[in-house]
Length: 200
Image (cartoon, rainbow, N blue to C red; front, side, top):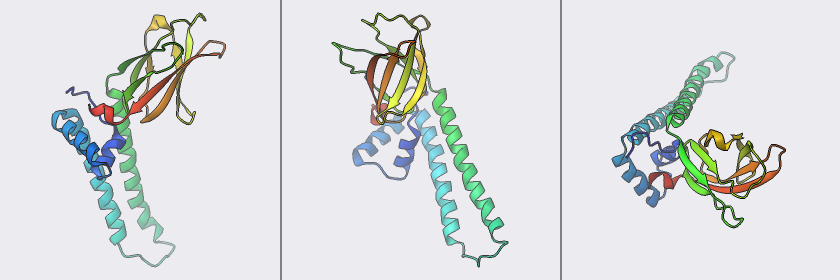
């Protein structure tokens, strides 16, 4: 298994907190046995979860003082520490995910359908849409939307430049749309961003 393989951070957190099914648990455990890169990421997540639990327990076990005008400054440093820890973890997670090599994917259309493809969550993509049959000249505008229609990325695609660099997407159903320079929708592909397929 490649040292560059990276599990989805949110999935790692769910696994660390025991919030996955037995089938998912087996997939996580099998993958962690053979992937050193993901083992290191899991240790980071574990440290984060343990730190958050400890901070939460400390706050719960502390006696509740009488509310006075001077008690707020005592709580602020604890909350600020937890917030900084959370921000640091998210920053490290995003940086690590962005360092993973881009996964090349070619989107194909057959007889007017838009089957697209399946990719792992949390992995940057190098997208090449199939433009067979499109007579409108490029360059084109590419757009990725989630199942609710929210735009998660927009960019330019020119066949001469090669694949479009698309940032990592969250797990779920997505669509990749190809527009002409005038804004006409030329083609749409389905894109399944899957958490579990990342480990197979």
